[in-house]
Length: 368
Image (cartoon, rainbow, N blue to C red; front, side):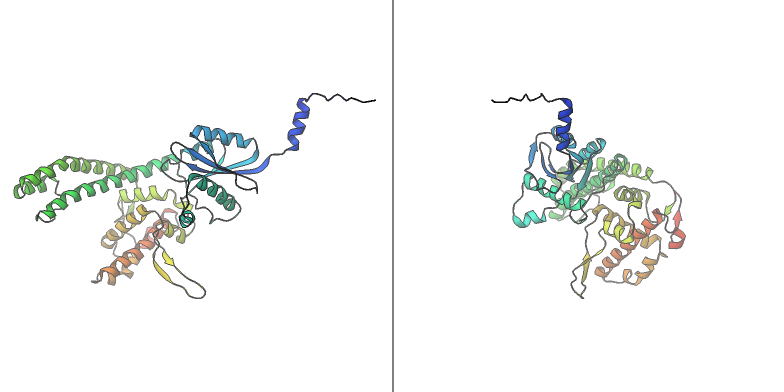
């Protein structure tokens, strides 16, 4: 005789018990290749293999996907490369209490293999994030994400530099025309007095072409002066003579936070003013500076050095290289400027963090 057993319908309690049989993952890592119209994401669950990359047509769709991952793991971490999209994705993920890292772009391995696409980028980022979080700090070059106020200050600084570069570019076009026609080089030829003299001694057809740019260049002059005045307002208080308020404001905007750097080596590396090295075994070979830091910082520091030579003659690095600076060798002068600049940014870091005083450095101070 056959015996039949009735199977009870699933209840809320039984569903909960089934869910407990499949515990959440400890950590899900997501590498994202972010673009304006698409987001390619690859997921890695705990110690498993990196999964197939998934494509999302919008940022909102990707954020919804990340929210669903929180239901499957105790921790979710996301990484993407810094780029033209800025840090909006980072801030939105942080606002949802999701760990997010931004890293510097790196495609050396892909260039070597001559294969690169969005899927490969996303999968590589996911794998690198796993190695980074497990102790390999060289796997990713993490980017320090500025606050919104810091980012605004940095944008103002870089907008000023962009205006200056645009003025140089357009001014060089006019100067090139004058040179090609045998009129020599004219400095700031668009300024009112210079252009008036130029109009009297140059062929009319050249004046016509130059006149098309005069209004643009003069407007750029006004915008640059306005931007410089706004930068000056960002730095108040005493400062060393030779270090202009706009330059210090720009330097602060690029560094973001001086207290983030714990040693002189790190702050020197930020400016890229540390020697390159190719050493093996007992042999050590040092070369030119790496220039791997922020180019804007290196430019600001270099400009400061030339002013320090004039206005801070008692500054120890200036005294150390005085003989070279007064000599005829231009190559050695450049090396001296780099050496002074490397020490200068370290001393500014020491001043900003209260490790030393201006009097101890022998600097002449001026009021705002």
